[in-house]
Amino acid sequence: MNIKNQHLAELYAKVEKRNAGEKEFLQAVGEVFESLSPVADKRPDLIESGVFERIVEPERFIQFRVAWLDDSGKVQVNRGFRVQFNSAIGPYKGGLRFHPSVCSSVIKFLGFEQIFKNSLTGLPMGGGKGGSDFDPKGKSDNEVMRFCQSFMTELQKYIGPDTDVPAGDIGVGAREIGYLFGQYKRIRDEFSGVLTGKGLTYGGSLARTQATGYGLCYFTDNMLKKKGDTFAGKTVVISGSGNVAIYACEKATQLGAKVVAMSDSNGYVYDANGIDLAVVKQIKEVERGRIKEYAARVPGAVYTEGKGIWNIKCDIALPCATQNELNGDDAKALIANGVKYVAEGANMPSTPEAIEAFLANGVYFGPAKAANAGGVATSGLEMSQNSQRLAWTFEEVDNKLCGIMKSIFENASAAAKEYAQEDNLVAGANIAGFLKVAEAMKAQGVL
Ligand code: NDP
Ligand code: 2IT
Image 1 (cartoon, rainbow, N blue to C red):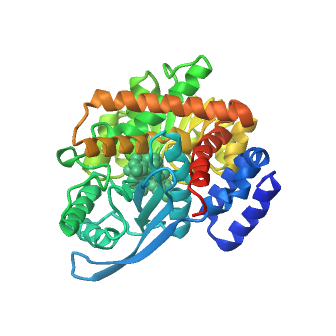
Image 2: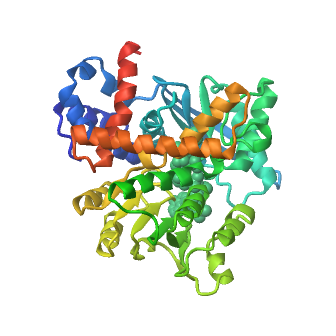
């Protein structure tokens, strides 16, 4: 940790004490404070109005019991969470994650990051996040439905279309959003845009499914253009094979690149001919199977159990699975193999050591807050359509998404140029995202 501003360094020590043991949350705050040091140096007014102290403390943190009956009639108990981190610029907005690793530290890091990401989109959305340690893997549809109904029976007390609007994340896709929406509507007797990522028959937006992966590629395309480069002919490695990874693969391929590897939590597949995405979609979106099956279906593809995807030679790496999936050694392996661009589809996938290695070795690096903001941006567009009671065409939404990713790139680059170096998009994204929220917090008084 290298927080140069003294006020922020002292405040970080307090945050560490107050959130003892919450390593993901502390990692996220540490990175942001490193970036914000030059801002704190320049803006004593923000220190005086307590903006830094206030922004690291959630406005509200809700934890609840989720009890449900499994298919054998046995009682199961999970833990539910929602952090309502910051509402300075709009209603709380952010996804729900269902994964066994979910705990308060994970939810708080995600909620904290969401504040800055949502600000970068230019849309009026505050920061929130939620989820459960429930594992949808291996559960029947009925079990998932009963869990979602129980989860929403409690969560509905705290959310609403003008208060807090959840969406999907790891383990929460169209199926889960459907069950959650149904239960909210039933209890509150209200058909509203309380969730995003809804199905197209009940208020969802075209292009929301594709938005995070497409947006990631639009962002990367801006990085490439800045260097006089394009996706055409590039070799790409993408970790994960969920929603973000699949649509990143689709867009990168459309833009002329060859994606040679994808993964899941068990291992990765390498396909020198370029990933056949229809096969991945069939395995993941239809059968809910394992990436291993790809190698059994596509001649020439090779499956390797375990980690190691970052040892594959590529020009562009797009980590799209989970936090801290790419460490310092992985970064060194990528650099040794000549990687030129890394852009984060997942939230905080690169460890601080990895980011340091990329920046020190001239790898152009697109941080999550900026690079994966297309998902929540399109959620914002879904909210607009719900408020208007209209549905826009795919092209309309996709064009807006493309424009938003471009302006995020430009704003992050401009802030980086002013406060750090132009290519340091980590600093740029943190600073540009922060300043809008900070001005709003200052204007609204001590809350
Ligand atoms: P999905 O649940 O659709 O897919 C997650 C993918 O990541 C799966 O392939 C999964 O493998 C893998 N994965 C999850 N956890 C781990 C782990 N601990 N170790 C290794 N692999 C893992 O989720 P999404 O695609 O929606 O989310 C992926 C990332 O993108 C997350 O970090 C999320 O926060 C972020 N994100 C998502 C957005 C969205 O709109 N969905 C928006 C912005 C960011 P397996 O199936 O084996 O678990
Ligand atoms: O991390 C994220 O930005 C998301 N999971 C999407 C959140 C949203 O509200 O669409």
